[in-house]
Image (cartoon, rainbow, N blue to C red; front, side):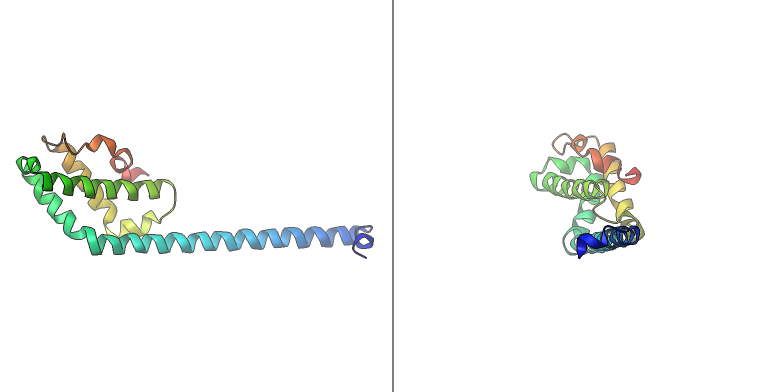
Length: 142
């Protein structure tokens, strides 16, 4: 019966419609599923920032105002920890895994850019190695 339907142009047209209709549905479903997952991950990053890093951000900016304090191991580790987290966020933006516009609206992109600019302009950053954060460096343009 199935093969008989393929003998007529109407049957072939119906089969193509079913195949491509299903494919279009799958593509649309995958797109919206992907967008939903992006938003969920973006919200998790914002929550992660609020839970763990908002205090780090303030601490880091204070440390960077006094470059001599970077000689303390604990202070340098805070800078490295926050910078690595910022680099991870930048990589996720670059790979289109999270919604950059939401992060911009929240102000996180600006904070990360300000952090990177501050650390690069601070003279005593040898142990922090900001040159390793290549994606964080260009977070605004990703």
